Image 1 (tube, rainbow, N blue to C red):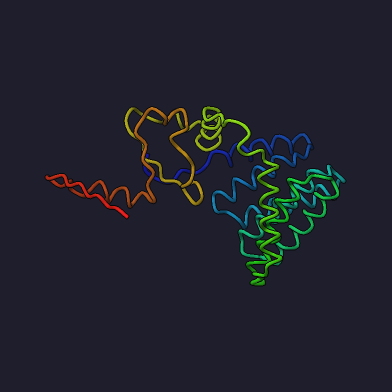
Image 2: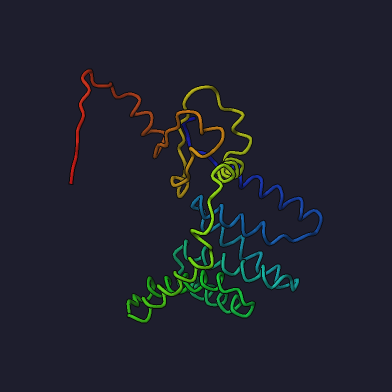
Length: 230
């Protein structure tokens, strides 16, 4: 399957959002999900525009305070991804204030970590208090996430990844190996967990041209084994 994969998740989210718009219903969770997908695809500017419009909508309609906080937090992430650290710092500080008011410590820790990272990147603040705060917030995030207290359901994770990233395109697969050429952060996706790829040879290439060049290289007649130790 040479060529970059354009996540069907965006199309699905756009379709769902269009249906809710026709009903006159605003669904903040759809915007948050779409923001994360756009960021994963490297479309930070689009993510920022989407989530900022949603913030304006939820404020104008006096919607859920909980979703407002998460939208502001998503806006901070998107602003940081665009390189606008000043805006990211303001948004993360606002999200931190909202999460603390709502007594949501795990989310507050996430917002505070973004704020600290912005301070580090924008101001070059490498002071001991900042480093101590970063360690404290990281520990709070780890504790609040429950990491290490339960077993991961890899089958379910693979199913959800396939549904969100490949969607109906899995029906186009033929027998034989698959070559995936992902974009941006999708290079880190564990493609082999997906049900349609689990039992077949799957390779991840940095680009379609790199994959094509590799196919043209003649295999050496004599196999050599190289051992490298440290």
